[in-house]
Length: 434
Length: 176
Image (cartoon, rainbow over all chains, first blue to last red; front, side, top):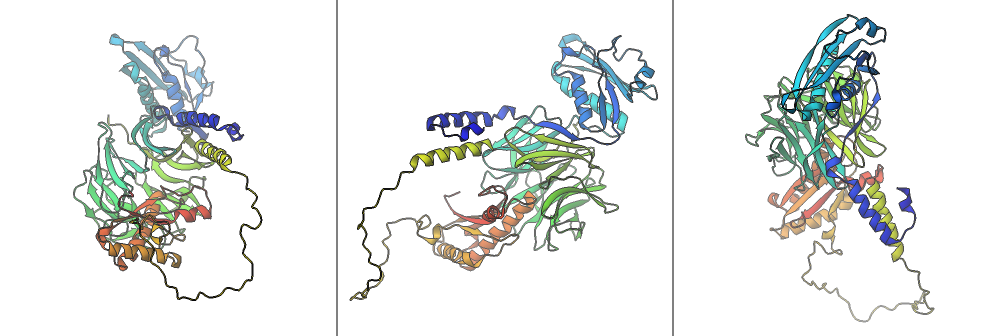
């Protein structure tokens, strides 16, 4: 990169510039990579014996399961070499022997050819200290389903050992900006299989998944002003849900996936409205002489939390979905925005400004205690995983837009980035339908 | 990042190609004797109206109407005194050209939530619209929208750049 700063004849520089443009933006392979940069406390040591016969499938299921569990920050995966005698889910395992290797849990399994070019993937999970089997499953799959099956197995293991539902089979949406090209991308929660849902020469912000997982709402500036679109993932078709005079933004889905709360300036100022997902039945929700924006439904559908500066500075308020007076929720500091409720409705995550820097914080709604979860200084756009255990958000790494994730207790940290591009505006998708 | 470096390199290289050494000015080309008394002209002078070649005053760089940007202070949407003449000129133009349509795009600097910044930009574009309507423009002539922090004029993280991004841009029909 630095060699280009030395004086070179113009023609050579031009050629280098053209080549660089081709390298900087390759729409197909802007792969999201995830690195773990902080681990949790009390990580459960788990040994996963490489599944017998797994070379028949790509990728190997063992590596995907191990990466999923490690990424959650709640497990320490132990190295297990080839076993003699070989182990699979049918073997009588010597659990006492595994105890002496400090494993608290053990997974054994195998991949077996099945009729019609399919495969059977079977596994068993053991609680080593208690010396009991916690169960196992068998799947019959096509080779293309290997990765998804490994995620399902990781979900099973995670849930059996932590009591919480796993999110390894979920997807995330985010916006990638490279030069003046913007893409709304969707990838597996581990960053694999990224696909572009929409490409534009104008900005895209505020993507949000419908709770039923079938659609994304987002704001696009392709009309030289913000318009809210609802985009069907199955068909790739989209329609404008809010394209009124003035600005249309900040879409938020109702829990039943049927309507959106949006911020519109059509009646002056930025105020909250409700609209059906197809753009019909517009109703005004707030009436204030100030800014009301960033609506977010509570999981029970009773409340809409939002950002308002009606009190003189941007703070978080909530209003009943049926309308009525708004109640202020945040009181400390002079800048609290971007409210997001945890799936269990007990925690409010928000962005707070402290001494000119912006952090993601969590407020316990019962005790009103606030804990700062991040330390980047330019953190924004938090989004909960559907199990409420991880929060994805946008951060800045040396001038480059990246995503980051933190566990809800602030201990587990991840950084997610795309080479040679800015990533921003993450949205964690719901559990898959089946 | 790489793209910015490459673009900057290209600019530097091309600029280098375009500079030429300054020629020596021969002595005596311009002869302004300082301090010479100037006599007032004998005849009365009066201003002559500029010839309009049918040009578009909106694009004429010597016309105030070609100025389209109002800058705002941090967290403010009031129109500062230095920008009042520009707004007045556009208000007059819209009043006198009822068919003219304007889009005002409000912007905010990068600090903070994107959606809250979108709303701050909206406040700014509405402040400009309101002032234009006081000056005689009609509601249907002007749409005020916001681009928030999404279309910055510069990308440095300092007050000099943030100021350039706290702005309202006035665009006429055909320009957007």
